[in-house]
Length: 273
Figure 1 (tube, rainbow, N blue to C red):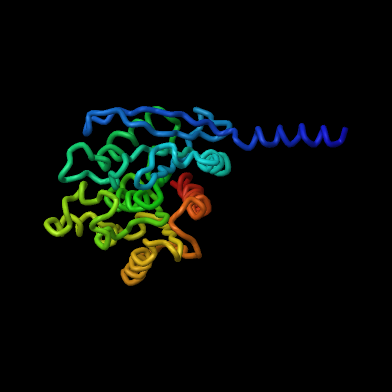
Figure 2 (cartoon, rainbow, N blue to C red; figure 1 turned 120 degrees about the vertical axis):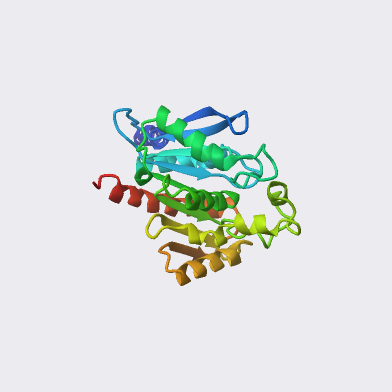
């Protein structure tokens, strides 16, 4: 009898662990003339009478808008921190900027001018940088820092996990040349569109930043170089380095620290006058 009661309680507990709701939405992009899907995760007890902070969580190269739903990662974080998580589809290899060589890849415009206004209109959000953050893995880590550096009016906090924060050492990888042209003939474009060269855009204390990369990651060296450059320029940031590779075992752990960092930012800033 006792084992039956325990089993019933276990089932009830499991059911309550995954109470967040996942919507699959489709937002039309005028800049690319197509519908683009996103996963929008609202926390348990989501109430339209309340305003919720939002984290935009970006996938990596060859991924899609469903990636962060694996093992209920996004759902658990939305519930734990009582916030909305938006997972946009960034295309197979967009790198989240507006490609100067391919008009079909205008993902900076899409996220900053099309998706964010749509989310704020259709969900009960804190429609202000004090309640909006962005982070991502690999290509998405590059994208999160790239977008936040260029749009400090939209984001109050940003992060990167195993991010490609300097793309120049990888001229033949991950379709970057399709977005910027080949490196040999377009070095200026590569220079201008890599995160490590964009630190001069930062307004002091405009962004709360957290950067994370495993020591066995092929992006570890460029992340350490970004960290050192930020220290030299006296740019406040959290930098996390620990054993780990470029894989989901690492990212499922790393994202917990990212969201905790951003949740703390929201808690200290949203209610300030």
